[in-house]
Amino acid sequence: MIPFDLAEPKSFIEAIKLLDPDDASVRPFAGGTALMLMMKAGMFRPTRLVSLAKIEKKYFGIAADKDGLRIGAMTTLSALEQSADVKKLAPMITRTMRTLSNVRVRNVATVGGALAHADPHMDLPPVLIALGATMSIAGPQGERELAVEDLFTGYFETVLKKNELIAELRVPAEDGKRAAYLKVTTGSADDWPALGVAVAIENDGASVKSVRIVASAATSKAMRLSSAEKVLTGQRIDDKLLARAGDSAAEEADIIADVRGSTPYKRELIRVYVRRAVQQALAGSGA
Image (cartoon, rainbow, N blue to C red):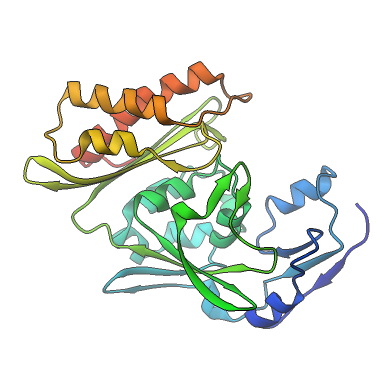
């Protein structure tokens, strides 16, 4: 590992000023769970890391209000898992955290870092997209609001500029929605998934009023499956309708093949697990 500078700013604004919009070798450093692996493998050689460990404490906490949750970008995944407010207002997140990697990683990895890294195999992005989460992004020109679903542009790619940081996440309360997240792993339950599917459904009597269906891991980025959503919206759920939704999802998904499965295999997984995730959400059995 080659030498590099380590900056430890005391404020969020100071951290932004230390980033260089024209130099990809200058990076912010949050939990570092992914960044350190990249450095050890020689995939990334920084000239400067800007540690966020000493910035204001407001970026490390979780707060609940009438609209849902406000989560600081430096909040660890373990804090999400253990939060009573998260369990009450967005229980799908709590359930998801229990098998996201392992407790050692969750104790260090942060919400903002997990999103900014844009690894399509991460469990958190599809769950947040299904719940309609938004975020505040800060840079030299101030803050801007962005839906989590609009953050990702491709494989390990986001709309973030090199001198921008995620400041806060806002997650609406699940309220009357029914939600579930299912993932398929080829190894242990906490291994990288071959597929993740998150679903959030709001019913209007016996019919579906609204639904969000999001796939990840099998795809190049966490992405909504709008064609499957259209199949279900306004309809009464039955086996035939679920089969149509699964077929639509499999056709729409931007599949990537890797060591966890071929393109045909993952397409079939999506076809099956979209149906299962919807059924689990409607049954109230979650994840």
